[in-house]
Structure formats: C-alpha cells, structure tokens
Length: 224
Length: 47
Length: 224
Image (cartoon, rainbow over all chains, first blue to last red; front, side, top):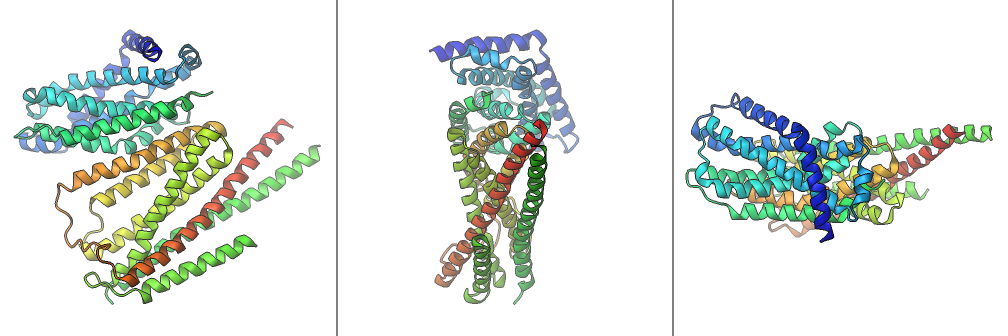
C-alpha cells in the first residue's frame, strides 16, 4: 500500500512537470507525423500496400519516438540533481520506476491515440471497427516498450553520449515487442480482422518478465 | 570434392577471428604491463 | 609456464578437431563436403551461448556481492562470446551460399543469432561510455541481466513469426539422424572450442584485472 501511495505521489509529480511545459508530448507527436509522412515516399501508399507495410511502419515510428521520449525521465532528474531527493522521499525505490513507467506509458499511449486517426486517413486503412482490440494491442505493446525503456533510460543516463546510447541499448531489447505488436496489429488491420491472442499473450509475458526484472534490479541503478 | 574451398575459407576465417582476438588481447596486456611498470617506478621515485 | 602448456594443449586439440572433421567424419549425403563447416559452426554457437551464460551469472554475482572480479569475468566472457558469435555469423553464410543459393535468409535461427550479436555489442559499448569503474560495473551488470532475459523472448518471438512463412528450400537440416562418427567429431570440436573459450576468457580476465590495477596506480600517481 505504501508503495502505491508513493507511486501515486511521484506519478503526480511527473504529470505536473510534463503539463507545465508539454514539450515531451508535442515533440513526440511532431516526430511521429514526420516519420509517417516520410515513409509514404518509400512505397506506393494504396490501401493494399498500406495493409502490408502499415503496421510495421507504425510500430517502428512508435519505437523510435519512445526512444526519444524516454530520454528525459532520468536525465532531467540528474541534470537538476533531484534524484537523491526523490530517492529519500520514497521508501521503496521501485516506486520511482513505477511512477515513471506509468507516466511514460500514459504519454506514449496518448500520442499513439492522437496519431492513429492521422495514420488511418493518410494510409487509407480503416481502424474504427477494431478500435477496442487495437487499444488492447497498443496498450500491451506500449507497456512493453516503456517497461524495458524506463530501466534502460536509468542505465543510459549514467553514461557519456547518453542521447545516442539509449536507442542503441533499447532497440535490440525491444525486437520481440516489435515483432509481436506488428503481427497483432497486422492481423487486426487485415481484410478479415482477427485479434491474435497468442501475440497479445506474448506481449503480456514480455511485460511481466521485464517488470519483474525492474522490480528486482532497478534499485541498483539508483545507487549513488 | 565440390565446395572444398568454401570449407577451407570458413575454417581460415573462423580460426583467423580467434587468432586475431588473442593477438589484440595479448598486445593490450603487454602495453598495460609496461605502463604499470612505469607507474610503479615513478611512484617509488616520488616516495 | 602453466599458461603456455594450456595454450599448447588447446592448439593441439583444435588441430585434432579440424583433422577429425575433415578425415574422420563421413561426407554428408545431400550437401556433400560443405557440410564439414558444421563442425566449426554449431559448436561455436553452443560455446558462445555458454560464454553468455557465464556473463549472466557473473552479472548476478556482481550485483549481489559487489566484488570487482565478477565484473571482470562478465566483460571477459561477453567479449569472447561475441567473438564466437561472429564466427558463427561468418561461417553460416559461407555454408548457406552453396546449399541454399543465397548468403543470408531471415530464418528464425539466423535472425535470433543476429539479434543476440547486437545485444552484446550494445553491452560492450555501454561499458566503454561510463568512466567510474563501480558505476560502470553496476549499470552494465543490470543491462547484461536484461539482455540475457531477452534472449529466450527474442528466440520465441522470431520462431513464432517465421514459422508462419515457408521454410527456406533445401533445408536438409543437420541434427536429424546424425551418423555416430559425426557425433564423435562434433564432440571433439565442442571440447576443443570450449577449451579455447576458457583460455581466451582467462587471458581477457587478466587484461581486465591489470586495467583495474593500472587505474589504481594512475590515481595514486595523480594524487602524489
């Protein structure tokens, strides 16, 4: 219970920091729009072609966007020297990760939801009729990205060239997430939409494995 | 005996990688050994 | 003295393994002489995996015991494992080209080996970008644990994904009904390559230990 309380307080703090500037969400949205538009030059975006390439392109865009978006979550604390204060305030260091994880996942999902209509219109892929199942896939995939990403952000914040290092460390770790969520999304956007529960289950397993790893080993990343 | 050259190439490359790796490691060991020696000497002189 | 003797023994074993794989093992029926690469290729893959297992265990031991030697062992085994994976990735296409007619295919095993290679490249890259030895050891240990936990997930996802596609043609898969002489030669090669791995890791460990020593001396020299 104490863990949840601390998490809620820290989560509030993360939200307020972001709401004050809104820089994270705005830049991420602009980035995703850019990728989606630039990608349209590389193939002929008719409806059938889009169905083949669309899901992969969408998730690649989310993956790269996330690797930019996750940068500040520990870097900001380090640059402002607030990490030790946060650590002292929370009895369980896992709460820090949990709060940042929740905030990151929320931001990522928000940008994804804002991007979905743009993608659907630009690439002629109807998404409305599968929205609930798609939301499930988006949630489990984004959670996977953020669970691994929050841990890796805490690692890369301690190194030189951190901005470059984070994607390098994160993207190979996330290749299972990319495969599973792309396949699940492709199955939903196909002519006969099906919810591939095996892939969603795989994503859930990924989330669980890395959440456990973060719970067991995350605290060592916050040591002075 | 078709493709025998490919098999040879594979073995050469494989062993080459191990050999080169061993070579770089032993080089680095040698240069570090020198450096440690020198550091020891300069430290002794200062004492 | 002992080290030189061990080196000599390793060289002899490697020579014997090579001799055996050319002259003792029978020529494979469908693929012919090219299949002899198998005796270098497959044991290397297993030895690489052993090396990464050593890295993982050493990472765990470092996190819980905080003794520098575990960090030294982890980086040594990771680097040697990477050398083995490199050999696997080079010998694979040399074998594949005459048999399949192509150098590379995005088959499940090839792809997951490639991702494994990328993961450990990232691990070693991370180590070069953190100065403080304690911080470097801890951060990279946690990343190493993440990477190793990711390996089964990568493998599973790629397998599920690729089995939905046709298998590459002419997959006269070795491992099915191996001749007993083939098995013996395989065992020779495995033992020889494993001994080489132990030799290389010891050598690399010595280097890492000397680095630690040099760091201490350098700091003393600066303080004086």
